[in-house]
Length: 252
Image 1: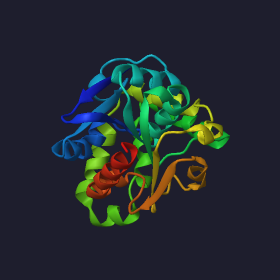
Image 2 (image 1 turned 30 degrees about the vertical axis):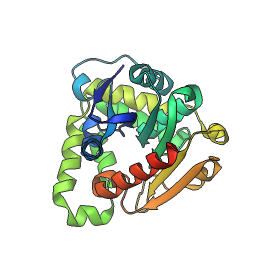
Image 3 (image 1 turned 60 degrees about the horizontal axis):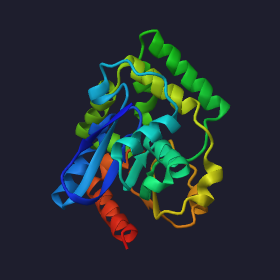
């Protein structure tokens, strides 16, 4: 269901869970910089995306996806998840906490889809099945980056568009959308997350606007940083700094 791409480095690995609709390439720039500093990294590739794009994936729940991740990693790790990657990390926190050394939740939340959000995902699924998967990218693209980034950084804007259009197959998009639509509400588990946790939000994120939930995690540090929903692409150096500080804290 998933495959793991190993980077260089030693010690407890940092496992990167990509957001939707991106594959493991989303995290490569961050992983490379960490590898240069000797930090071990593992990039997760979901079924129906990236190197799995040509395989027709079976339907999966996010719990099954989380189980597949920990079974492939096979050791304790620092789990970093953004957006959909955060949803997967929340399932690891609830169902497979023994595999977690710590968590970094980025631009995400623990709640289930609202009825309105489910209707929107159903609409996107219908469009993909009708051969109009570009509607998915058009729906998500305007909210991916901070407004200022769209205005001043056309190179990054084009990179994001290219990655979105090349990360998933048609069936990969459908199974991912279905899994997010049907995910369970894990907000009731926040008080029981007992691993060192850093939660990072982009101050210009138009998708994730509720940040109050992070205060319920007992051992959490909350950071509001510059950038939009995909702030690691907008501010990679700062993101690497946050991760390094988190690892130093979590390893004490």
